[in-house]
Length: 124
Image (cartoon, rainbow, N blue to C red; front, side, top):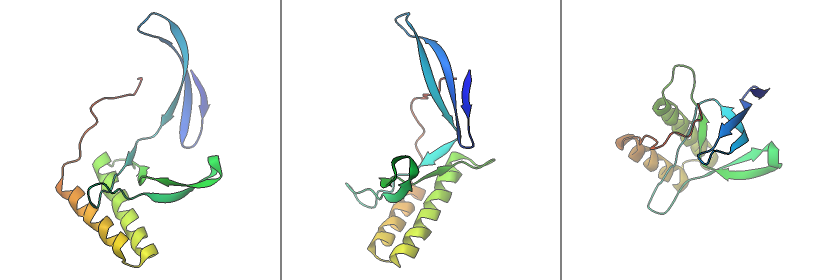
């Protein structure tokens, strides 16, 4: 049963029978398809972005992420998000070392296959 429907996500309340036979109520947040990229410019280093989040009234360090647009594959969305973050980094850093490392991480990502998830956690 849907208990909330918003612009970005909805919440369903389901009765679920667990493997031990017990029935529990589970609230499930449903969100549109999205992607997360993990830019690794060099071993042991990951590039994060700083973004304001109203829910916690603070700036948080996060992996770059974005929504999958209608008619777009997750791979296309990841590449679009990576290019957006690269151009943003270049604008903010004016081509300094951070931007160059980000570009190298993107180059490596283009050359390596995108791995598929090994497990689907969707309850549908």
